[in-house]
Structures are given as C-alpha cells and as structure tokens.
Amino acid sequence: MENKKCSDSLTIMTELVLPNDSNLLGNLMGGRLLYWMDIASALAASKHANSQVVTASVDNVSFQQPIKLGSVVTSNEAFYTFVALDENGHPLEVESVVPETEEEIRLFEGAQRRREVRLVLAGKIKAHEAEALKKLFNND
Ligand SMILES: CC(C)(COP(=O)(O)OP(=O)(O)OC[C@H]1O[C@@H](n2cnc3c(N)ncnc32)[C@H](O)[C@@H]1OP(=O)(O)O)[C@@H](O)C(=O)NCCC(=O)NCCS
Image 1 (cartoon, rainbow, N blue to C red):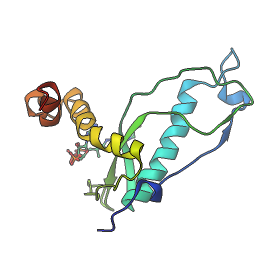
Image 2 (cartoon, protein in one colour):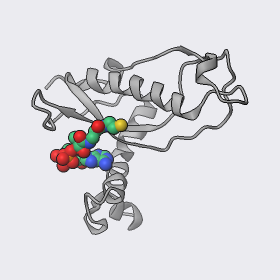
Image 3 (cartoon, rainbow, N blue to C red):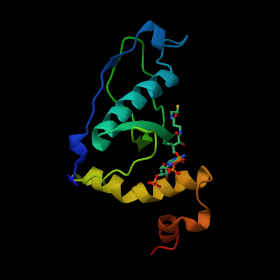
C-alpha cells in the first residue's frame, strides 16, 4: 500500500463555454457541466486507483449561478462515486486515501455516511444496516 494523498490524484480541467455548450439564454447547459465534471473526476479516480473506473453514482450537484457563453470554467462541486474495475470488468479493491488538509479531513470523515445514504437509496443495503448513519442520529 502506497498511502496515496488527495493531492496525488488532484485533477484540474479548464473549459471554454462555446455556443454549442449553451442554451437559448446563452448559459452553459447543466448536462454539459456534468459531463465535464464526470471526466475530471474519472481522471482523478483512475489516477488514485491505478485502474479503469466507472461512474456508480453522482450526488449533491447544485448550479448556483448561470455560467455565460464565453466563460472559462475550472470547477464546480458534487460527489461522484467511481468503482474501479479489473481487466475483466470486475470491481477491484482500492486503497483508502490519506486526507491531509482540514477540508480533506472533513470530507473523509463524512464519506462513510454518504456511502450509506447512496447504498440505501440504491436499494443495495437496508436502512437498519447503515451503521454510520445510526451513530449520527443516535449522537454516539
Ligand atoms: C458500478 C458497478 C460496477 C457496481 O457493480 P455491482 O455488481 O453492484 O458490484 P458490487 O456489488 O461488488 O459493488 C462494488 C462497489 O460499488 C459500490 N456501489 C454499487 N452501486 C453503487 C451505487 N449506486 N452508488 C454508490 N456505490 C455503489 C458498492 O458499494 C461497492 O463498493 P464497496 O465494496 O466499497 O461497498 C455496476 O453497477 C456498473 O457497472 N454500473 C454501470 C457503470 C456505468 O456504466 N457507469 C456510467 C453510467 S453513465
């Protein structure tokens, strides 16, 4: 295990909003932004996992202000969950990331709860199996 840090897989993409990316109001279309975010986060996930990855889910996306035609876009926020796959397309175990900054530590500490919410909503686990959420609601 290599103790990979968040900074080891940091990926920054820069895009220019062109006419083909915008709607009739001259704003960037949400779907295009999600597409760019998916690519940027897939590159980061793939760097971390050292393997191919697929998007399993996306949550907490919000569009707070319009992005005008001609703007240069570097970031937005969402949680993208990727699953690493081996050469036969089977899910692969990936080592945990080592959080360093205050923000990375805060996000890392909430990761298990967010994972459980996703899996409950996807019908992959039952609500009573969501141990980290139970702890949160019971104030343990
Ligand atoms: C993602 C995928 C590989 C998971 O396959 P699966 O048969 O559910 O595999 P597993 O049950 O072994 O789960 C593998 C991991 O994925 C996670 N997972 C599965 N479904 C998930 C979901 N909806 N949200 C978040 N994580 C999910 C599981 O929790 C597990 O991780 P864990 O070991 O840390 O708990 C499969 O559902 C798939 O190929 N989906 C399509 C991916 C794709 O085409 N993406 C592009 C869509 S536009």
